[in-house]
Length: 471
Ligand SMILES: C[S@@+](CC[C@H](N)C(=O)[O-])C[C@H]1O[C@@H](n2cnc3c(N)ncnc32)[C@H](O)[C@@H]1O
Image (cartoon, rainbow, N blue to C red; front, side, top):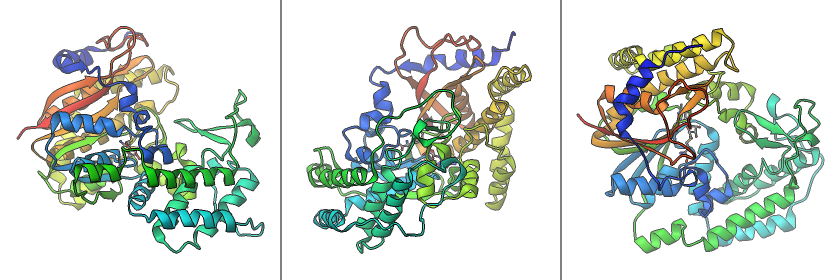
C-alpha cells in the first residue's frame, strides 16, 4: 500500500539540520540505569525515570546559573533533586501517586534521625510477630488479584499494622515505603510495560509460554534487606549522596515543590514568564501503561478499580484505552477564563499538516486491519492534542530566553514512523519557540533516516529536544 509521507518529508527537510548525535548521550545516561550509584534509585526502581547525571549535564550545558526550574512530568523527581543540588529553585507536577509517594519518602529520608531509624529496625526484627487473624489491609483490583502468595499477603498486612505502631512519622513513612519498594520482588509478577507479566506459580491460566521470574523473595527477607539497605545508605552514603554534596559545596537546598495532579490542568494555573528552564520527559507515545505497570503499588496505596481507571484516563494519553480529552480541556480553559488560549492552541493543532498526514495514514492502515490494535490512531491523535496544550503552556510559563529540554522517543506503528520529535518541535516553533537542537542518541548500524514510510528499516530516534523561548 502506498502511503503518503510528503508532509513528514517536508518537516524533515525543514528541521533535519537541527538533528545531531551527541556521543555523550548513551542509553544508560538517558535512562535510569545511570542512577545505579545514586542511593535513592537503589531503594525504588522507577525505570521510567531519567538519570540525575543527564539533568546535570544539560543544566550545565544550557543554563549553568541556577534559577527556577519546572518539570511538568516529574516522576520520582529526578529533575527536581538533581537541579536542587545545583542550587535551583524547583517545582514539579506529577499525577501518578507512585511517583508522588516515592518523592515524599525520599524527602522524608533526608531529615530522618538515622540512630532512631536503626533502633526501629532492630526493634522490628525482635518484636514483629505474625498474626493469622487479622482483617486484610490490602484490597486488590481485578488485575492484581493473586499477585502474592497467601503467606506473603498476610505478612504485608501484618507489617502495615506494625508500621502504625511507629510513632515517628518520618520513620513510619520509610518503613511503609520499604514495603512499597519490594512489592514486585515478593510477587508473582514482573513489570512489563503494557501489563504485568505473571509467573507460572501464580496458577493463572493465560499466557502461551511458561514464565519463570526466578526466585521470589519471602517477605521478611525482602523487607529486612530493604530496611537495612536504606539505613546503610543513609549512614554511609556513597560520596555521591545529598549529605556530602551539601557539605562539600556549601549550598543551601531549596525545598522542592511538587504539585499533585495533571499538568493539563495545573500548568494553566502557573504564573506566566516565571521559569528559566523546563527539563522534562513526558510519557512517550508508545502504549506504555503506567497504571498497569504500577498496579501493585497503586493497590498498596489504597487505589480501587474505579480510581485506577480514572487515573488512566486523566494521565497524558499514551495507551490505547485513553479517550479524547477535548471537552475536558475546553472546560479547564473556560473555568480559568482562558478560552482565547484554548482557541489559539486548537487553531495551531488543526492546521498541522504533518500530524494530519500521520493521522490519516494510521486511519488507512486501521481500515485495512494492519495495526495490532484498533485504537492506536486514537491514541496518537490524543497524544498530539494534549502535547499541543503542554507546549503552549511551557512557552507561557517560561521567561524570555528560557529553555525547554525534553527527552522523548519517536515511535512506529504499522511500519509507519511517527516523527514525534519533528512534529512536537514544529508545534513549539508555531507557538514562538526557537528550535535550538534535537540531540539524538548515537544509533547502532546506519543512521536515522528521512525515509518516513519505510517499513522497519530505520532506527527510531531517541531524542533530547532543546527549544528556547523568544518573545
Ligand atoms: C517518562 S516519565 C518521567 C520520569 C521522570 N523524568 C523521572 O525521572 O522520574 C513521565 C511521567 O509523567 C507522568 N504523567 C503522565 N501524565 C501526566 C499528567 N497528565 N500530568 C502530570 N504527570 C503526568 C507519569 O506518571 C510519569 O511519571
